Image 1: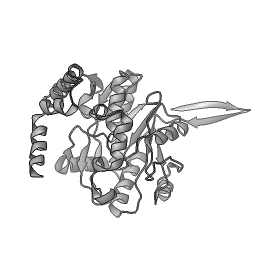
Image 2 (image 1 turned 90 degrees about the horizontal axis):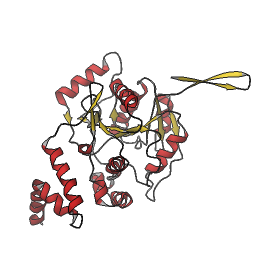
Image 3 (image 1 turned 180 degrees about the vertical axis):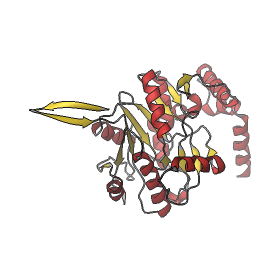
Image 4 (image 1 turned 60 degrees about the horizontal axis):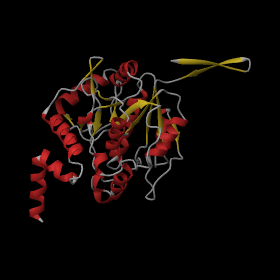
Amino acid sequence: MTNALLVTDHWLLITVSLITLFSAPKPFTDPHIAMIQRNALKSWTLLPNVEVILLGEETGLAEAARELGVKRIPNVARNVNGTPLISSMFRLARENSNSNLLCIINADMLLMPDFVEAAKQVSKIKDNFVLLSQRWDLNVTQPIDFTADWQARLRSSVSRQGSLHRPAGSDFFLFPRACYADIPDFTVGRAGWDNWMIFKARKENWPIIDCTPSVMIVHQNHDYSHLPDGKPHYEHPDSNENIRRAGGQANIRYTILDSTHQLVEGKLVRPKMTSLRFQRKLELFLRKIFFFLPEDSIENFVRPKRWAKRFRKFIKK
């Protein structure tokens, strides 16, 4: 897509990408993290009609951006622990992109052209929306060979060795730039903010579109050695701050199970009712009626297996 602008006596041709992907990668110091991030970023640059913006000053990021020929914006705001803020990332992406569609995405996700096709299809149907999906988890131990048929080889590996991640946690959100104009100062890479993104969409009555049936998004597995004590992000103190900024636990309960539509063969359909979706709908219904009860009491009633797990954990202490 191109726009022509008249500047003094000359025509200046400006190319406007359909989608701008923006991300704040981790430092490229750990060999495995560096490898999977380069894999992911390279896959993004091969997408049609897509711009890539990398945010931050992490070790090795400037070199990776030059190597891949993508834009890097260094001056992202950070919290007291030096971790980038989601609000700053959104602001910088808007200021440095002309794309109608923006997408915040984790830097370990492999994308293929079906991702762009899904965005095109949805944007023709809806004005405001958020597009997300479940991811496929795959162990990737070496740089991907991006020569001919790399997508077929990747899909084959996922079919043989990958696993579909449960519908909790989201690794990307694609949305028109008019959406999410005001974002709290969440910390990236910590729990809570992605759940709030779904809560916000429901609050604004934007369609929440799960494109899992139409798109294969591949997450390259890694450990949490980049976090203190190697613990998962939901045990990090910054996650507690994210929850506070989100408005409390009730606003971070939302997952892909709360999607209003699915993208199937180019059409938007209502998600099929599964046991997990039924549990989720029941939970939201009961919360409206018994709003005065502690949140855990309703959750334990709707999800007895989770309560039993917590009880076993408690009696072991």
